[in-house]
Amino acid sequence: MLLASYKSTRPGLQGVANRLIRARLRGIYSHNELVFEPGDGVDALMPDGTCAADAAGALWCASSVAAEALPAHSPRRAGCGGGVRFKRIALDPGHWDMRRVACNPVLAAQWFKAHQGELYDWQLIAGFATWLMPHKASRWTCSEACAAALGAPEGDAWRFDPCSLEAAGGAWM
Image (tube, rainbow, N blue to C red; front, side):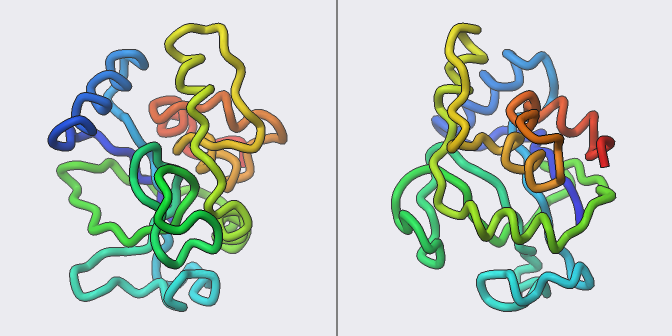
């Protein structure tokens, strides 16, 4: 299993968000995904039953997103904007830094399957900007969801942002 950290800039409004996140964090990453690979032993937990890459080379990734619509295979809130989801992504090495993480892929995939469709943690994002708003325990940012799935100590996942998660790389395991 891999941790993928986004270092590029998307077009349009999402690109503005990428730049703002990186500026606020004083780092090069604005998003994280956990990447499930063939051989991780989690085929049965993936939405289409396989970890094999699709025809475009895209692998199953899992994270939480702010503005993207949740896919049709999401058991909760399919089609609604923002939240925990699985998505196939063709990971261009020019846009993503990837590192192998030492964790149990089955537990990570089970975490994402159990939390699919849960809301994005806008309060935590607002808290990064204002330092006044606490996060919501039942909502998730990308790095928070990845950290929890990787086994971050109970209640500590919210402490990770895209840059600090990449730096930690699941070192608490």
